[in-house]
Length: 367
Image 1: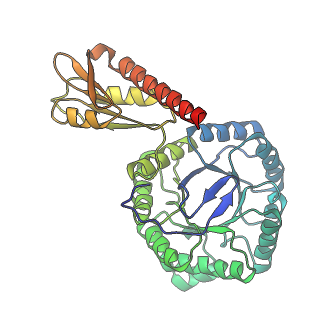
Image 2: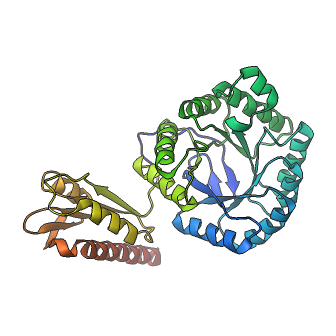
Image 3: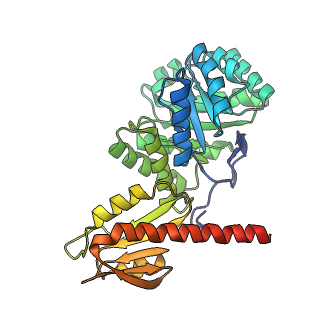
């Protein structure tokens, strides 16, 4: 993790085999959007999410048929699963023996005795609870008190349930306070972070379409992460759930918090470019999506900033006439023509990844 971010030291909980909180890596989550009763489709989507880099996946369990399906889904996947429960606390009791975490919403789960039963089931099965406060589903009395959702109403709702959890001596939980409004969400997380030491699940809920939601989430989640707040994130997009994982990774990579896969540094392109930067970047990014190893590639269209960026990357390309200059590990390697750029870059990246794997295996064998 980058040393310019001083992360808050929160309590550690365990979601399956993923440690959340403390100094552990900030985990990335998404949620399936298949029919949970369609076990095959849901399992396939979970595996796609895991392949994209999901640490944890949430599955909606709105009824008992879905609870039955959830148990089958759990047997077929290896990534930790969170059971998303609303309205009927008995569903949480039904899946407590198979879920890696139970997500409940204080605004709709019901009276304290119901929450108490969920706590008891979580304790008996040694699984954590995620208390998910949402501006769109606040308790009715808080809606009346505040008139409309704001940061203080989210915090008050959260603290009510903290008090219940504390009373029953249960601290195996994480907390989220989400709204679609960036300012409200950020303010709420800042306030709750000062009041509790539990791990926090970050997100801008119902952020919107792929483009708009990515921007909103990057700003809101990025602000909090840069302040050291947050232990796990979910980017909520009206898009393919795999996009949520990709954007989540891009946010963490941009802040130098975590790194996975190919990180492409590219110029925005201008009339000085000696090759079509945008086309090369887009095609290369698609070709290299299967790579999970950390590697940095610089693609710069001209000789103004090209050499500096290329020397700092694992693989670099600087636009030049008549031929472009390829750098490997900071050293000029060879000149390549425009008609072979993507193939050459892909080949160099894969060779670099293969070499790194071989060296890592040798170190392991020596150890």
